[in-house]
Length: 489
Image 1 (cartoon, rainbow, N blue to C red):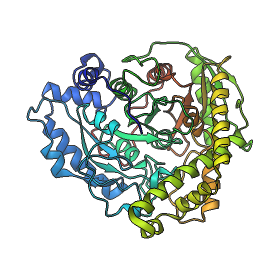
Image 2 (image 1 turned 90 degrees about the vertical axis):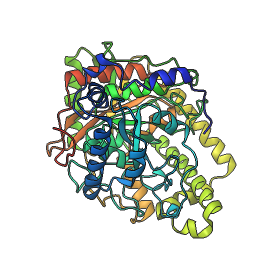
Image 3 (image 1 turned 60 degrees about the vertical axis):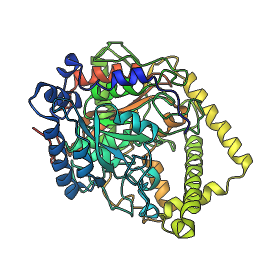
Image 4 (image 1 turned 90 degrees about the horizontal axis):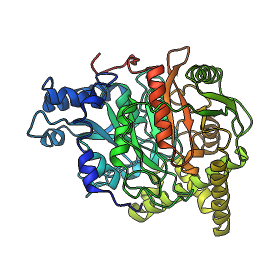
């Protein structure tokens, strides 16, 4: 991806953002909030070395139960410790779809089992690593991030700390499991069809997908094919808001900058609600009940809530998104063939090869027509925000997914159909470039987390963060901890 220019002075000033904002530190919602951890290190209550060593111990214990990491590099983490024990250092993890210097990038794939260490950091990873963070290793992902659960044949299933029989979602499932279990307070994630928001919803985290072009390493152009964005998974809204403020560039693809929010602005919004899926169905009863409770909460907070409809044909959009997904898989397989030859291609999972075959079958004219339809969806979506300011939808059609239900070993056509029925809402914002978030407001009757999905247009990041701060104050979730928990209580 092409880079936009990062204002280095702004980035260096923001590098202390988690360590030098006392007013914000007082707002930390739980011990594992990054801002709160930074405050404890600054005060001398905890040394930087103690914080990192404790996180490494937690990571190794959690790995045995959750299988969330592809790499935990204790020697490197200790070597990277600052000499000043009061310099706030936030332990974190990098998702294994992105390059971090000195570590292999395996892309959740058996084809990359012998990959050499990366020679440099990717742009977003490099900027994130300058924010007083200290990466401890890399987290699991499905192969090339193509699935909404994290069960790659290369590493086996990653498990949900709320119930290890269930998936933490995908594709940022390893990062979600690490943060949800209290291993680290913040972890790198990315989102090409819901891969930040889906794991957040299933593990009780706050997951914010920034607008296209907002953060470091993003392409500037607002093209619907540029679906993937990088950000983080957190337990608190302040941690996510500060990360976004630090990592946006001075030329964020024509977007107005997001202010460094420390709390709610308090705007009252008109919020449209959609629950219908592409085939006209509805989500499961737990999700529907969560939506209804969220509506009542929003109304009690002074927001106006109304039913709206998809502004385009959702069934046609779903078909086109699968076609776009298949083009991405085709590009990935082509790259594997170039690097590893046919042996590498044969090591890929059946679903990856199935999607790649579909992508290769598209003629140039088909691809051009597809991009035209997706651009029309983007424009229609943006134009639909006339009588409402933001959208509320489910994140998924179901409140939980058991390990093995979406195993990559299943027949590929059947697996893809089941996955698209589940992921009925989040891809819209990837194609349109819009800001969106999963907020851990609700719980199902079985105690599992139930995130609620809010979205705006491209550029509506600040408005969504305002709403997130309001919701965190009205219905706090930070003290809600999973049964498998490694952090401080």
